[in-house]
Image (cartoon, rainbow, N blue to C red; front, top):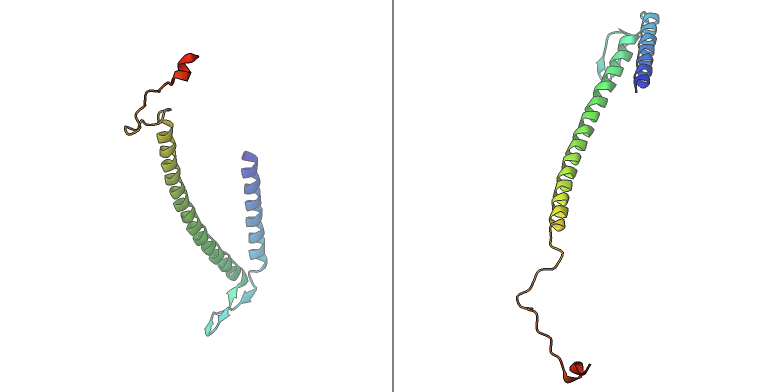
Length: 119
């Protein structure tokens, strides 16, 4: 696992350095945004791209939080079901091996005929 963390750190540092180079090389490039009647003053290109990236991070985080909450609720429901089923299994394990005795069906003494006594 430490190798994966190291690799992830290298990738993050590489992306950060690439973003810095991109920002430095495009600091004089400007663009304006227009959406319906909304218009902005010319902004540096790196600010527009950084803003779009941050909006994407926020939306992705919100979706991740919602999905995480759904999973936690589902896990809690399944844990309750497991607990209930485990209690049922424990109750079934504690049953006696012989069935319950019905008072209506008390044992009857066997009757023998003359043929049985001849043997």
